[in-house]
Image (cartoon, rainbow, N blue to C red; front, side, top):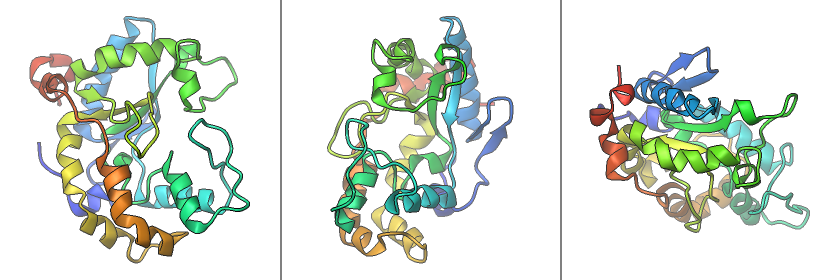
Length: 244
């Protein structure tokens, strides 16, 4: 599988992804093919597996970041509750945002390999998924999905990069990553590449971010789970996960 260019890695172009209108998703072609296999497998367990979020461009991630920095979107603590931002320094705001949202240019969603998934069949009518850990616990609305994903996703080339707290991004039991592409993308997203992508961006808190960028790259980009051999081999072993 070919690697991603610097512009693709940082979400500044979308030449490496395709739209899936029926699912409302935008994905790398290889990830898209594998996800359809994973979705079909989930259906056998009466789980309607659909993306809540997929590819995001640099500009979309920048909007999320700036909105959270300026208080236009909720800023959540490590338990999913609202932060009291009234006395926060810029450095503290940056750290708070990073718990749940990536720095523009540093989001794995730029690669088209990452999908935040829900069980549409389990969602009560008229409600929206919040993508918070409580929903995926045993007694949560997506409790069955939270147990099903780790047991099945590797057979189709996916793994959970945020399976536990590693001192950076909080655990995200809804976030799956297509290993055959993302495992090569991660080491390619270097500190220098990220810094270059941010250089001219109208980023809120840019001074504070620059002071912390090396630590941000280490903790919030690199500190993730490694895909298992099963996920990396799935596209060779499982016809349903084989890219078209």
